[in-house]
Length: 383
Image (tube, rainbow, N blue to C red; front, side, top):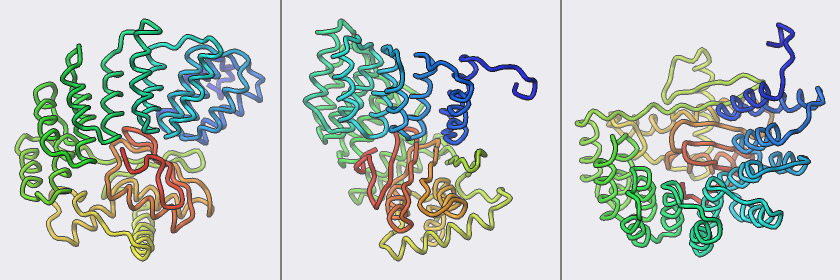
């Protein structure tokens, strides 16, 4: 379009920013923002909201707030984009502060706003506040809760370890729970080692939906975490018997405006020798700092301990992080986008990598953002 000398308008910029959001292409999106300023395009509600959403989805919430503050006009969508962005990046309390500001400014929230608000309560561990806001939807704003709001409440209870209460909440829902709600509960059961409710969750998922590999893997990991290895293996075998294959892990990293794609144990990359050497070096250093491989996250057909350890070492985000370490200047933040939920091993490894290499690492997985810094993660080890 630029080569054809066609001037882009606001709609063009919103579309390009959306593409950058989906990919997590921060540098390209920042260039678009610079272009907007250079062309003196007006920061309308639509364009400003697109920028807020873009920065949030690249894990740069400070820039989202900066854009929000510069907007001369804001609507419910602008406020909602900021609240959701803060919540998904683990800044739940700040998200709720902006929700209160929104109310003070007499902007009426919509049903999507409340998804952000309830997510914020979940990330901040605010169970009572979550209950209050959930009731406020219908009592104060005449908004009928949708399945997504019920799912958020299950997540709030689950994150807080109130598994029985979450289970009871699902059973008393006035609408039929879907597979996503049960998956949310299953993930909580895995974290808090609640086997019976975890088993019940998987049964309900199978009844309601075509189960995918993540469902079986969650239950398998739940069994492994309490030493029931035979049951863990049974679930994995059941998954194979049903012809359910684990989706290949894929991670993206943007370097100098180019998106690089990595697959688990992929040898097809033209720079694979350099990447694998960097990965092995990275793994050696974090082992010296106390990292112990969690071989339960190895691929299903890896049998020997050596092969299992190699398998987890070559997960897609580890390859992408290693490439980022050798291709960026010391101290530079590394940003990764991943198509699946981050596994336990990669989560533990990335915490140690952030400390050993003195880097902030931001990972956007299928569920949420993880901001790793100095050996800890913004999700507080719950995802």
